[in-house]
Image (cartoon, rainbow, N blue to C red; front, side, top):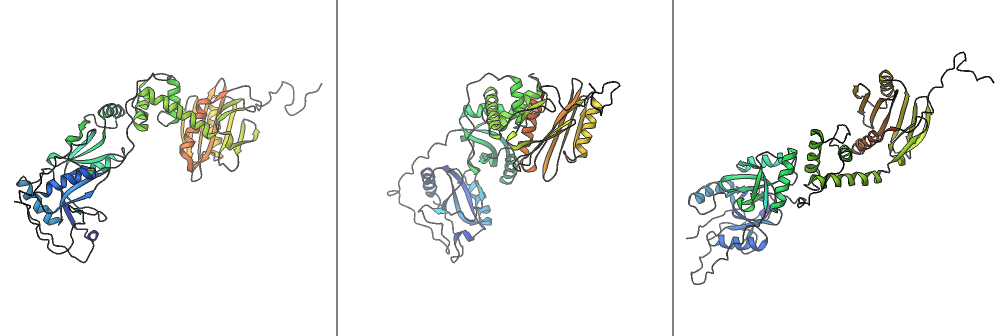
Length: 448
């Protein structure tokens, strides 16, 4: 005996107007033909089967439309009778979603709908066998009871993984996953995400057949398939590339320490270029080289201070040199500026130079890090970002200040890292004070 549903709705308004209309979700299939076959099979038991589209070519099969109260009451009865799957649930499709009946028409919106006559056993055709569940594996991030809890968990996970999806599972569970994807791809990326601490230690691989239907899934960029393992590039190059990417703040020493390993793991999981660390670092080094070309970075050798460093010279032009400073002003209103400083001295002279930087407003409201032989000042206002870094080296206090437009903070951080990594002395400073000869007035010309 087929279950009969009586649906009473106002005839004068279009379907989308009924925001209160609900359905009992019983299944979902990927692809129109698979959904049509499944809906036809359910149509042998129920006369109010409807379908409606989900994301990624999935189509839901449901009973309805019903009021939420009717749906809540009926779902309990149908589950108790074993007439629908145990993981069926009540859903309220969005207002712009069209419910389609088995005939291909929009679900009826008129007054009471009479039950159709049952087909006789002689004329009824056997329903086609349902297609297999689409193959694939999922990285299972979290499972919770109830759709509301599932949606809350999904929102949290999408802050880290924008393409995370929510699926229903047997027993009223809702599962947040990444996938589906090939099993070998899921295996390598689960390991990579665990190394970075991006997924729980108890995250695991789940097969598609362990899940019932998509609830909220989005089309994301597929995770790359496993690469052939590749040797790690030289670690000093890796550290520079990681610093450029904002992953590493340690010393460029070529040592395989915990900070370097943590930064490598974070870059692998964050960029998702390859799950193989050697391959991922080689590609990161290539990206850094391409970016340097795009930014027009080149080696600046400044004769006044005797200093050299990598700088964006297509945005700078020489302004003037005075005493311990060499100043490069913005070119073509680029908003960038560079100041090099160098003078004989030690820690006190370095601290004095940091005070000058602050007093002249080159680094607005700076955060200061001052240690023996090193200073770092960073600050910003609405217009500019400033960074000053200096060292005591070979009896000299020397360093640089870079000023950059506030709207381009990512480029500023990367350029500052390039400057810091490449900063070196290339020759004697021409703007050092002239030594005073004993018995000679420093302001007078030497007599023949």
